[in-house]
Image (cartoon, rainbow, N blue to C red):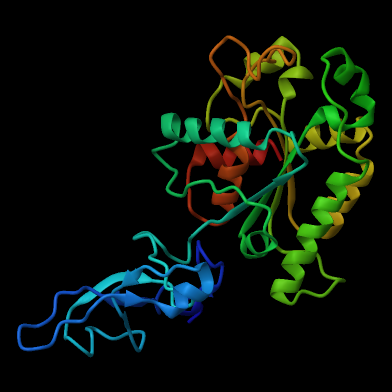
Length: 315
């Protein structure tokens, strides 16, 4: 019975809804002997989004096979809570990922590289699309997975490397730890999880800009393969510890029950930080898809012997 009661968050209002119990709107194609429905502002959409545009009436109750007023067939599926149109592929297997990290840690660059890598190499096994959290706790609280992007230059041990490159000073000390703690608080409050319980949402810690801390052999070994995990979780965790991030590691592993560490580069080589946001060479990202593949493998959305073995070996 669990499969019939499985829920997924609405992509617009983040309310948990059952994909088998969606609402629909009238299609507007009334039966010839019935008075046609007319579009009108939807009070539910006005309340949620301040949207006063006219829409076809919502067919109620949920589960009806036609509009009770005009007899029209079902229109597009909509969220019962906010009346937003849902994607055709919406299901309980929906994977919503919240992306968080300090300012200038590389979140936007990472997502751009991830999108490019998926389009070029991942069409055989990827069916979800990455979503970036906009800072709203409601989004993080409803996410089925969370990605934390870390900037290695923000750790005090790497201050010398940061200064040589002319990079700005990092955010306030402990900012990343607070980001993780605030995310955990949001999830616990939304799901009624006790403070003594670790958050059951899988968390991937992705250390960006690893090209600045890897030798040529490491970069060549990455092979720029979307399915390859260039660094093991233990290797990345050890590097963070060596960089003085022991407190961050403690917070992450205390607050979240399932944690894995990843490393990679969205550009593939260091940019000229002083003159341009990226180097003159075309980006050759590596490792950016690994967290997403891990999330999807955990949720059963991808199945690949090569991928399963790769993730197992890099644990």
